[in-house]
Image (cartoon, rainbow, N blue to C red; front, side, top):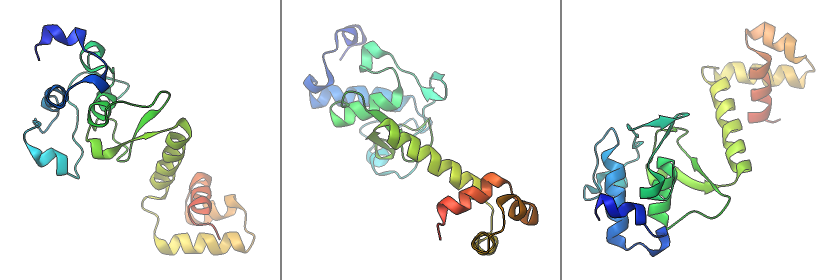
Length: 170
């Protein structure tokens, strides 16, 4: 497929398998691994396939005329899955906006994306807190201590105490 006829690109559903592979190969050439479609390693990689081209708000940007989508991860998902359902988001399991590995992407709703963001914030807040401290916080919560008393006693923030409450309900 030549670049000049890419602007005449039909809907993803009507592309042949070879046309989709050609577009996927173009996307893969813009990643840090410099992968190609014929190099099957990227298909089976658990690693992120990171975009190194132009970005906007942390997301890879591609030509909508060539790929039918403006965001690289959406273009990859669309090419690998013959489109995206109307109104759906393409979310990252890996929480890496640069990643276009189709196995790290899934179609989800705005509430799915919000749930993932909340989970990732909790994980970030809990990083570095020992299991012993978490157990102590849980016991103190059960015994009626206030969040601020517990936070002061363990040199944690109230947000971290709340994250422990949400992540480890009693």
